[in-house]
Structure formats: structure tokens, C-alpha cells
Image 1 (cartoon, rainbow, N blue to C red):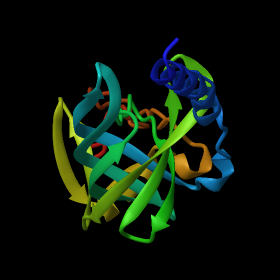
Image 2 (cartoon, rainbow, N blue to C red):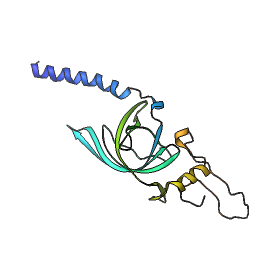
Image 3 (cartoon, rainbow, N blue to C red):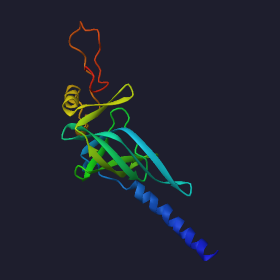
Image 4 (cartoon, one colour):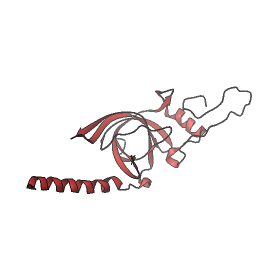
Length: 185
């Protein structure tokens, strides 16, 4: 075996055994007190020798901090893609640089016990985002907060699904739901 082949084989062997410790390193969720709900993301996946190397992109999300949802626009460059939130799902997050960069905690596909982090560079908005009928809209943070209170929704404190309220007046023909903030419910 040539010396260069031996070095390459040794490096490949080292990488194979180094990657699992990096991926399976556990992050303490308790150290991520904030929550981020990702509505939109646009990602470019970069490859090296046919293998995914890193992803970068941008998007829109709500940051939940101190019981208030605030819209953010973000960009990222991470080892993997940032997935949009499903339903009312949120990602645990913490500040890296207050009001500038957030670190979110993501699961690893195919390994339910593993997590990795991704840093989002953010720009805060003076409103909250919401999704209705597949379209992204915005509303004042105070209106979104009222919706959260009415539907007992507070992902920072483990209330991860809004409650569905029923209208106490039986004469009304419309049914209430927790389908979206900025609705009449």
C-alpha cells in the first residue's frame, strides 16, 4: 500500500469514528429557554465530493420570549438544513448575541436521541407572523398575545398546542377553532 493511500485510509477511519460523537453529543434542552416557530425557509444545500457539506439560507419565524411572540427574519449557514415548523411545533433556542444571533436546537434525522445546533442571524420585527390558508401574514404582537392567552398557548412554558375554544353562545352558527391567530377566535 502506498503511503498516500495509507494516510487517506487513516483519515477516513478517523472521520468515521469522529462523526458519531459530534452528532450524538447531547445538548441540554433546559439551556434553551426560548422558542422559535419557523414559517418559511429557503435553503441551498452545498456538497463536497457528492456528500452534503453544509446548508445556508434565510426565512421568517416567530421568536417566543417572555410570553410574547415577535416576528424575525433570519439567515443561517449550518451543517444541515433548517426545517420549517410543523403545526405549532417550535424549536428550543437561546441567545448567542442578544437581539442579533440565536442558537436553535434541532433533532437529527434518523437518530431520535441526537441533536445539533444552528445559529440564526436575526432581525427583529415589530409584529408577529401568522399563517392562514397557506399565506404568511403579520399582525401586532399585542393581537397575537391576546390570541395566545385566549387559546392557552405558550410554548416557552410547555403549552405547545393551542386549546380549541367553543363559543358559549349556542345561537351562533360558526364554530370556534384555534386554527390561526388573527382569526375571530
